[in-house]
Length: 369
Image (cartoon, rainbow, N blue to C red; front, side, top):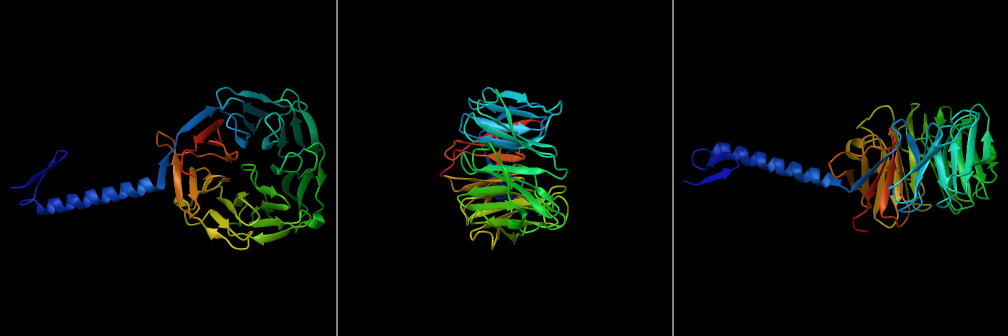
């Protein structure tokens, strides 16, 4: 009589054929489930850096593996110069009030600009790691609401605000943020009623050379495109829209033609809608990139030097390869990584993330390039 012992269960091939077949089928199903699970998740070395627990951190800027800046609510900003071993954290107040920062731009390790969101909006600049701050821009317009700040180099920067009276408010600098000029409304397609940008992760605008992109949501999802630095066209985008907190929350481009948009419905996770798309022709056509559960996307970042793009949101953090396959990144304990914002410096060994309750984390990039 042939007997096989598996754990504490003994199967008799001659007397218990049916039981054996059922057990074999269960083992096969469990193996298949484990195989599928392992293909859709990957544990990554993760370091956590806890800031003040009342902070909501939506603005994050990596300068190098050593120097990283963040900005948050309650006028708080902070930075590390030793890869997270120590942090300097402080705050800025204006007439006793603490602005809410959701935008940041680091021109180098010590030179940084912070932009608050609503009226009165302030932009501050430091040259010396925050020892001194100067106000370089203010706006007291009642409807001003800045969503993102982006510099394509140390001199040229842009900030995007929600529309007022049918016009998106955009300001530009050509001298490192010392002075700012508003882009004339006549160069921009009119905003639709209920259309806006989102201040979710300081990533609704991208600029390289003469190629400038910004994205919208709300009642309408669109990609605004400029390839001459002077005029814009608006292209419809497939991310869900129609409600106040639906639409495109983030974008990143590798060049004028290839880029990503992500978002969804901020108020509820709807697994029936695709939340991430890729274009290879400047936004005229899009390819859907379904994430596990079609998770909401708050931030997308192309990891230059690798074949991966990273996205994060309230459900977790995911890596998408150049074939569109998505894998969820987990920390070493198998926990998901829900965050608001991503930042990555070309050539860096780490991807940094920031989110609610003062949480900052970094993932070690150890995959094949």
